Length: 631
Image (cartoon, rainbow, N blue to C red; front, top):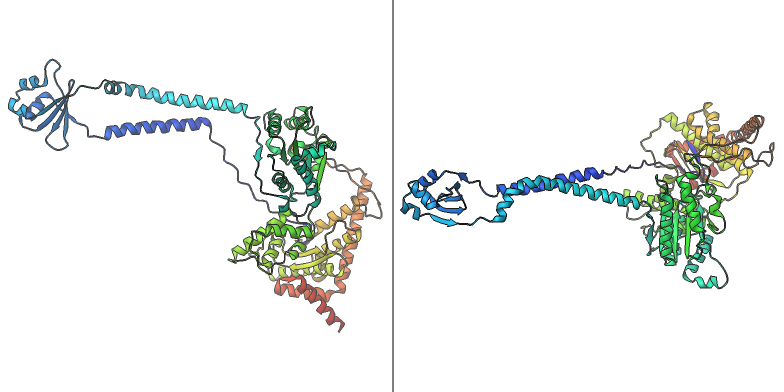
């Protein structure tokens, strides 16, 4: 059971299917040689099986057959005789004497001259080529197969040696016909204005050069995952109409030393050759992390690649019309040399979209969707504070999938609302059936969250209360702010803590017993209380001070070090202060639930019956209870 606020989302990890390793060149060569051998054998088999093998006879047997008028034709080819009998399809072969002619030999064997005249005798000179082919081919065939196999081996070895020289070839892909424009990117007005200058410089550089202006060499797009960094880069490519090269930072680095630096040189050489052009490096932090923090020292391959990028961006050659764009969601780990003027001297931050931008993003992703006439995208935007552009695209896609699953012709409003909850919490677990006791405990737990959120002043409104399992949550209370929030006050945090502990408190009041369902709520409440005291300076006891200092140490790609800048005595005081804040929040929630116990019971009763209460129904229910209590 979890109380979900607007900024918390659960993501399901999907295991990636591993690629199968490629077959070795040796195995390929053996397979090719074996197939060739089978092919040659099949040809010879066909030649052998094409005609029936003739029976070999002696001259005396041939003489008897001639006397019996069984022979129709004899073909003489050297000393070989090919005999055709009058019996259909039957062939024989024989050899004549070398010293005498065939006629003389047959007469000597007692053949009647009259019978011999009935036989058609033909003389055929043997072909020299066919003779030598029949003699030499059986001996040459094995050598031909072995030679062909060795040729394939040498060819593959030569190709492999050539590939060794192609390691440093760039993997950047060029795009010249991007269909994405700035109009296809909703929101991000300031970011688009900054990038329009880049596009205008590429189209009309004289305008800036006459004023003595120098366009920024590098543009760094910074923002959370899904805020549209890569989409903006594609839009720049579409607007500029110049060659656009894109490559990922991870594609530079290889296991061989020097390959990354070579690829950087080749990439920039290709971009300069096609100048004016744009080079876009996605996930710059893969190679742009701060130097000197790893185990490889100055010989580390990644650091050599970074050094080469620094030289290419601001070396001796400055008169190039190549603009480098890069995207990262970790600007805090980048090397300071990358961010100095002359390299990435223009940094553009991409924020999460506000409600108006979210509505525009939803409209863009709804272009190819069949929406029902009553679909209200403004309501969807109101229910998705803190969502990025990628999250909103996912919601529209999930809504289309849900509608198609139910064989609908159009996407309805409830499909999109269902998609929001699916993205935030996961799909409904309809097979997860609760017992009557568990259902009652869950109902009171969620009713406690909802009632405390309703009674205490705050900007977060209850939009839905449900005891239907989603993801790992047995039930959930969906609270969303009435407006986009950039700053939160201490009093709002204290209300959030009381709401988080509302389910825990309701279980203790009603059942005088606690369950494991509140574990996630307690964890989140403890983390929030610690941040209030150690990071936000919201403790009256400690005042305006940050307690704890996080130092980033990269060991095999992981951050493992966090230092304390306070003593053990202060640590004990921090723990006491956290306990005090949580106890006050618990007492406030307890006071609200005990004063409104009749409301708590009614909400839980409706939840047990209907399992889900929407915003309007929830507010109407509480107003009816208040009227009944007054009367």
